[in-house]
Length: 319
Image (cartoon, rainbow, N blue to C red; front, top):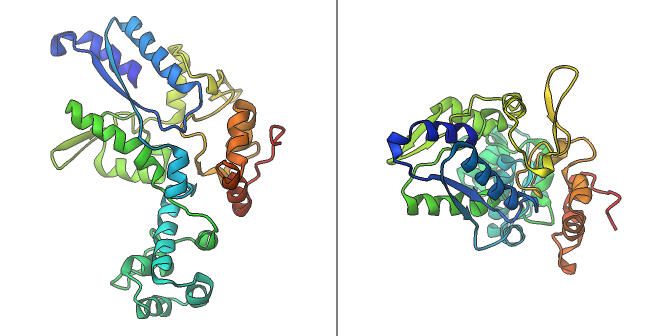
């Protein structure tokens, strides 16, 4: 997206008078070690390629991923599931209720489950999460916890979807407010069901409370991205390896498929081995050792979390 936008920027100088192109990079403290350096290199590459200036803002939260996991919880299953699990765990803790004694025996009984939950003063949100019934007694499976994930309610560790908001969205919003600019994101509708629904609802441009947000590449597919990078010989970050064309004509990276938050466990249960954490042992062995250590030993405690989820993590780098 930056390559395309920079080209447009260079062709229409009369509209901005050689004003630098504003680029914001959120360093979440959960990036691959090579990514911050690549971001600076790529911005210099774009400047030279299109003879423009880039005003790069690197934003970072005052707290780290380690802190967020400790205070908010681990990002597991999916962002949506993590949010629902967090809602229920927080409610049970506040009321001093036990899931296995006060809740679990009464589930899966239809409207009777919803009425029981109401009888013990569960708010409408919790009734929906656990029974699938809205306050109007309509069935809504969209925001109820799937049966296969209910076991996370009893997880001996906190679970949350807050990491992205704290480490990425909030710092970016502060810069946006400072520079008084509306953001243009390179997100794709196919990235997730939530992004797909949002894109289908608003299209490329969304406006709310006097603020705008643009996702001009929302309708692109991952193959569109890879073909663009390949055909126009765009430099890619080291964790991706190289781009190759397979026998079926599709393009693929030889290493990592994504370089987002490297320790995020959203969707990790769906990956074939070696999964992202197992691959991390080869890419950043010291990071891998750190996250596998228990919290008592000063690590992130991923061994306990992944054991509970049944996700493999053992690798040659595991010592």
